[in-house]
Image (cartoon, rainbow, N blue to C red):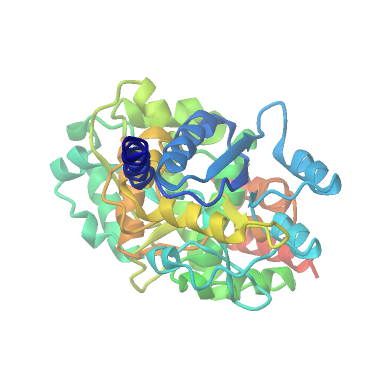
Length: 420
């Protein structure tokens, strides 16, 4: 009897040791995350497996994209009564759908909110509702070694006087530097997303506080323009066109624009950090950075940075607290940081992330973002097709010499007035 009791006590002690060593679980809880980035599906599932080992919570990942577009599939899930804990919105339309469906949850008190400048803010009440999946950004990209050879300090290029002085100096040194043109710029019919979207965003937000930057877009949606600002903006783009390779400017596509810059034939490029994979494929090793599209007289020391999508926690889900913990871990732990930067290849939206992405322009975006020197994206708030189809061709007319700055301003103003 004593031997039996002793045996039982030993078994209980061994069991208690193993129990103490196991990760704490949440009672077999499972949550679901629906992603709109099929290209990071494998990396996201890998991180979810790591999180499960740490927390005991299983995170089921399902990704849509490519031939299975996200928007109709998430709508079908909701219509069928499936309510994942975490889902994605890409902007205003997704927000409005989530609002109508009663799926908005207030995340304002979450720890990661203080660590980012690009959370999605509910325009109705100012509460934080969206966790930024990543960030993208653009400014006036430059070749660091070439700019140094030209004797230009990028820190001086934060207002229109500094930009003009740099362009004039570099233009006079083109043969010495081996350049064909100062800037790699496109304004052809097939590239109106560069001018009519990203270009127009400079008019909409340059110099405005990040979370209070709707002044100009609000005017536009009422059919009004800020004339003084618009004139400065038009003069700046006219300057970019004059200092660009004319053939690339008027007929070149994306590949030609990137190619001119990649082989060192231009000092600057008007593009965002999404170009990094192409530059990697081209074997480009030179260091790059960004200066602002600084077309105003006052200093505007920042570039355009935004989140292309956000994770929302579904107010209708059953495991909201576990969903919040998962997002907090992604934003604050070494494993989460490694997933975002190294595994998924993204530029993280959180300032505490010390890991650096591989791409030169992505590194520059992260540096500007971590300093809080950023301006918002508002181009997607314009009516569908207005930027590319209505405003974009006006840029092409000025680039080709069909109209001057004053006529650009008039045509731009007339187009905006028609939005009344």
